[in-house]
Length: 230
Image 1 (tube, one colour):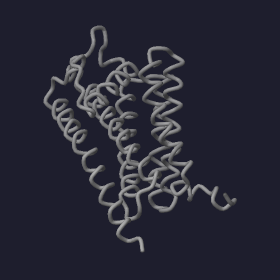
Image 2 (image 1 turned 180 degrees about the vertical axis):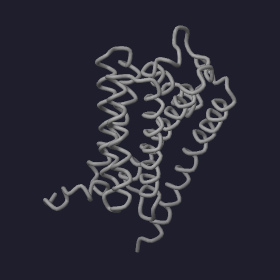
Image 3 (image 1 turned 135 degrees about the vertical axis):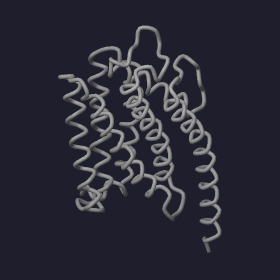
């Protein structure tokens, strides 16, 4: 790889860059849910989420106006998440979660546009498709948390857990988001408020439709690419 290719603007086209973003996202899910009960687990989870934010910024370097918007959102989101971790203030968790949700929505749009553009099927695209699935789960987890922080009784949570514990809430609702997106539905956490139920219903629909759409798209691209070969 030449020195020019190491420039951040080439982050998306470089295979290693997208792989890193995918690894950070997976690491966040695993660490948050397996070690989130411990202070060091929460710290590592915040670090992984910070890496996701920073890596996401690099995917937008090709469009300057988009880079500016994403950098501002990322910087504010990072700052609020770390301040909320070490100096919790009433209302700060809602603001930090809401901004993170907006940032993830922008990142999801950027990655989706790149993955579903014209071109042959590559391992790069497949990694991007997996990343989109993880970002969907992460976005819904933050959306659930916004609802739970504003409507404390929106979810029937495990015994002893309240909506006033943002770290524990984020861990449990991230788990709930993944099992809803995959339509596993263990039933240990259930949406009660109509807004929470609507979000869960939409996530379950997306969880069913997205793999089918992606599979059909990959097959059609592969067929078209084979036909274009001389």
